Length: 159
Image 1 (tube, helix red, strand yellow):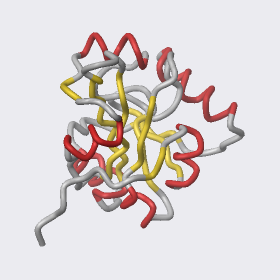
Image 2 (cartoon, helix red, strand yellow):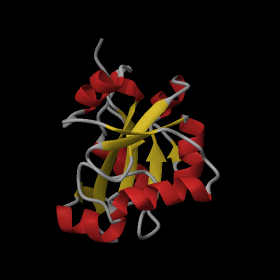
Image 3 (tube, one colour):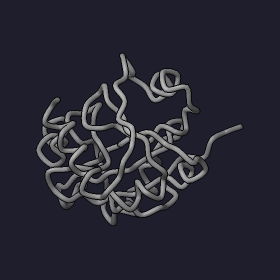
Image 4 (spheres, helix red, strand yellow):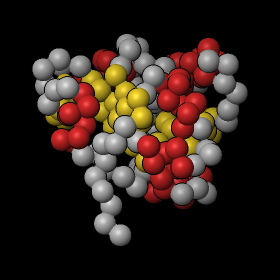
């Protein structure tokens, strides 16, 4: 078991959460992960990391799989302009590699927001510290464990 996966498992244990951690195959997109798990794409909680341009700190937006982050809305929530977080920043501040960033088990505390669309599902799935592992949770439980604030930061979908 990787160190990253162990940290996520430990975080789940610390919160007293018993949940399924599932190994996935090649799931490079939220849709691929949803197809493999047999769930709706919006049940995948994507971990989108930005860099605060003033603070230099990573900030995390837990986003429903079919949604995209509106950088203007996200910047307003963060209270600073947000830019692209590079792999080195993500690794150093979260302890995870891009593609496997979990909402929990970070090496350092991170500011976090949750897409309210995730609350429409009784079960959602999030990265468990590697690109090939996910865990199930409810949105409320994920928000509590991650310290996420539920807020609107996504682009509106055109139907």
